[in-house]
Length: 288
Image (cartoon, rainbow, N blue to C red; front, side, top):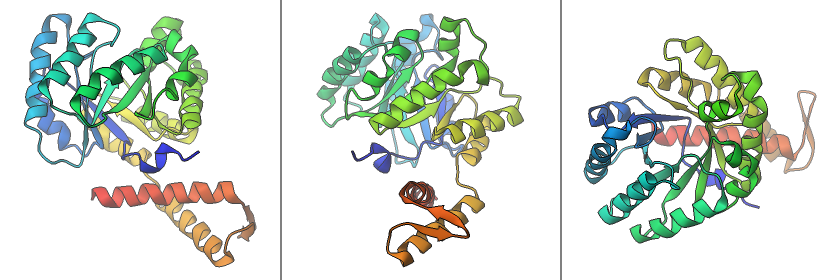
């Protein structure tokens, strides 16, 4: 199976911008975030949903070329608010780069949303949030439900609330790993939940490093100050790049097969890891 990771856009950092605060949108695009998500859900109070929807339309209608992916997070597609968000989007004809679906609980939601979004013409990429017990229990089916799914987003805060556990690394490691495994099986990337304490940059860097080692390719941000920290942690280090180049060079000279590099046995899985690093470097070079 060919992984959709190979054609996935750069998503080290995904910065949320509440649609009720359109003044923050241009600033968000200027942060260097790989993706900016216009939020109609958690970032907007119930009394302001209609205003936020109109703001989001204005932002999408006046889009200019940008290196950042621009997505929109609707409300729960199972709710009236979510259906209103989808209706607004397709009636406007304005097409974001991706639509983020919160609180996804089953495959049927994906099918219903895609049926509605077909009215926009070209397919719209979906970012699927797993943040409920029902969604977590069905994550394998959800992740592989459609070729239109480009990323699985782990929602730690809502899930921890349902589980009654602390929003900490140890208590959420099993669930975080389940989401990563489902994404890998489906051949899509996994994006991690935001870190809520914007005044703890060292803790953010530490958690980002752990998440990357687990296999996630990026992490959400709720404040511009978090973006450079996340970008750094999810970018290959000079040491990693040097190692990858050395491995690929030796592999090419050996014309494939098993080989030794500085005493280390190099087989196909190691080659794939090196290729993945150099692929990330190529994407970063394109962004510059």
